[in-house]
Every structure is written in structure tokens, then in C-alpha cells.
Figure 1 (tube, rainbow, N blue to C red):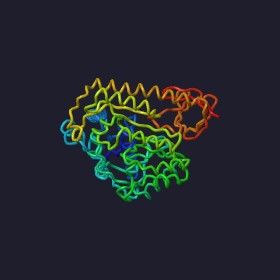
Figure 2 (cartoon, rainbow, N blue to C red):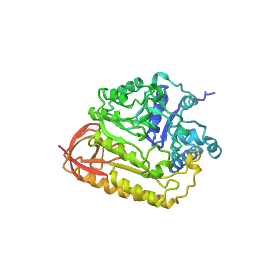
Figure 3 (cartoon, rainbow, N blue to C red):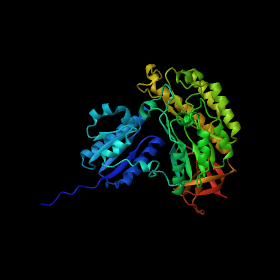
Figure 4 (cartoon, rainbow, N blue to C red):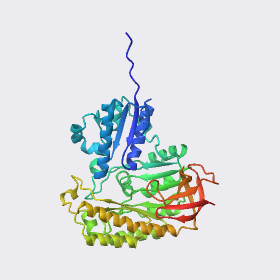
Amino acid sequence: MKARTRKPTKVNVVTLGCSKNTFDSEVMMAQLKANGIAVEHEADHDGHNVVVINTCGFIENAKQESIDTILAWAEAKDQGQVEKVYVTGCLSQRYAPELKEGIPQVDAWFGTRDLPRLLKTLKADYKHELVGERLLTTPAHFAYFKISEGCDRKCSFCAIPLMRGKHVSTPMEQLVTNAKNLAAQGVKELILIGQDLTYYGLDLYKKRNLAELVDRLSDVEGIDWIRLHYAFPSGFPLDVLDVMRERPNVCNYLDMPLQHGSTRMLTRMRRGITQEKTEALVDTIRDKVPGIAIRTTLIAGFPGETDADHEDNLRWIERMRFDRLGCFTYSHEEDTHAFTMEDDVPAEVKEQRAQEVMELQGGISFELNQAKVGQEFRVLVDKAEAGHYIARTEHDSPEVDNEVLIPTEGNYLRIGDFAQVRITEAREHELVGEVV
């Protein structure tokens, strides 16, 4: 009688949500590979028998996308296309008990800090010597670089602390080692991420230590750009601006979600800051780092937001003239403080207000971009498609900000290389350039 052979495990990792989830998936994939398990990211073929879905649970749209993805893979399992379906990440951390009943095809559910248990389920060992190792899913020349996990802030609208836990900083020595390893792999740009970069170090060093971390990372040979994402305005450590100004490889760029311009709304959101203090902070940042690009994110339709609050917000946006701005509609999240408030802004009003914010910002962005025509910028080439190289200036983060289009005809540029370009044309969210 012939012995039955067990089909080797091949894992497909599907990532939803933010860059922090991307980072977590990359760590998981490195651990699986080190255990001799074949793994791919969002494979577009049928060569795998196990799928791991890394979910997002931040707002309603993200939760729905995660649920739809789980259901699609549950159906694929029913049809025999995969043998096992595992779910991890924020949605699973928060809603696994409820989801288990409705989606029984899922073989196991894991939270945001359950990687060792997930690996054990896949008959793999968590290898401590691999801490910091990742299989990059981004283009090889840039990497998201998570410096902390969790959040201690008490923003009334946010469920992140419920899903990610309290703030935990990664030791500085470990981060420097990780940066050196990435540089050795050819990574040129580190995009620093965390729930709140400005809180970095308080738990380990009893002080805000982002400036020292960025300073030490900027010493790593081969890292040409360091970019800061997700800074919190209240208690912002101004000394990091000195490092940004003095170190040429620290991008003059700051992603600082401000959420609203109305002091009344900021108070209801428990942001610990006012409109006046926000404006003063932005003025200080721009004064200390001339030419800095500031990106922010706003919420439309928070409980209690009146027409007057919305108009106040629009006037504030007009005054601030942010280089980059995104806006999403408020999502009523259970177990947050805001959930105790009445979600009294109708959905269509939320959408209309968000649209008005983005239309206003679109005009500001167009004007700011028009002023760049004729100027020269150093850009990093991300990819080539549709007859153009797609590149970015130091003022632009991948996926969310402006792109610089450079015709491929007559130019030879390599993906991941820097080039000097002169801007010849400007649109609302795009620049066109020629190689100098």
C-alpha cells in the first residue's frame, strides 16, 4: 500500500489596511521563510494551500473590506482552492468572537500580537534571532520602518488602543541594527511609522527620544532619505526639527494627522490642543524647517459637528495651506468615548463635508504645484508604466502624495535610483518633469 504524502505548506499572505499592517506581514513572512515554508504576498495564482489574511479594523469601510476579503477566501476554501484560512490583525483582535460564528470556514483567529501562536499553528517556530528581519513587499528601495507599537492617547474617536494595546517603543539599538540590515539589502528610504512617533522613548528612556533616534538613523550608511509619518501635535518634540534641518538625508516632510480645525471639535475629540495652538505649532515647524511639506488628515462629520464648525474648519484649511491633506468621514466605533455621543451628522452630510474639504485642498494643491514649475528637484524613481517613470520628491510619500512623471522616451533611469529633474508642468496631484 502506497504511503500518503503530505502536501507541503505554501502560504499566501494578504494584507489590508495601513503601512503598519504591511510591516507586520513582512515580519511574518520572514519568519515563515526561515522555517522553510514557502510564502508569497498577495499571490495571483493558485500555487498555495494556506492563506493568512492580515486585517484592518480602523473604520467602517476598512472593516467591511476585511470582512469581504475573509468571506471571499472562505468561499475559496469551500470550493477546494485552499485548505486553510487564518485571520490575523486588527479586525481579528477586536471582533474574533463575533466573527467566528458567522464565518466557520476560518480555521483560526489571531490578534495583533499573536505572531508566535500563528507560527506554531503553521508548525513553525518563532525565531528570536530574526527580530527585525523582513521580506519586503514594497519596492526594494524603500521600506516602512515601525519604531513602536500601540498607543497611549485617549482620542475619543479612535479604537486603535483597543486593537494594538499600549505604547511600546522598540529599543534604539535594535532599530539602528535593523536600518543597517535594510541598507545592506539596498533600501535607500526609511519611512518611520508608529501609532504616534512623538511618543517614542517615553517608556524606555523616560523622555521623548525621537530626535536622537532620527539622528542615529541618519548616520546609517546607504540610507538617503528618512521620512516621518504619524506625528501627534500635542507635546510635539521640537528638537526633532533641528535634526531634520541639519541632516540632509532627513526629508523635509512631516505627516501629522490633525483631525480638525475647530477648537470645539478638537475638544470633543480629546486631542489635547486648540486651533490656536495648532496654528502656532505649524508656524514654528515651518519657521524651523523652511520649505517643509506638511501632510495632515482630517475627519468630517464627527458627532456634534455643526455647519459653523465645518465652516470654521474650511477657513482654517484655507489659512494653513497644507501641502498634502486627506479627509475621511467619521465612523462610529463601539467602546470608544465618542460612541457615547449621538452619531448625529447624517451620512450624506458627512460625505458632502468631506468632499468640500477635498475640493478646497485640491485648489490649494494645484496652486502650490504651479509654483514648482521651472524648479529643480532630486527625485527617487519608484516604477515605470504607461510611457513614464513614476518618481517622488522628498516632499512626497509613496501611494498617498504627489508623483513626478518623467517620459521614458529619451531617458534611461533605473528603478530605485535618484535623478535631478526640472518641473515642466503641474497638475492638482501630479508634476511632470524632464531630466536635467
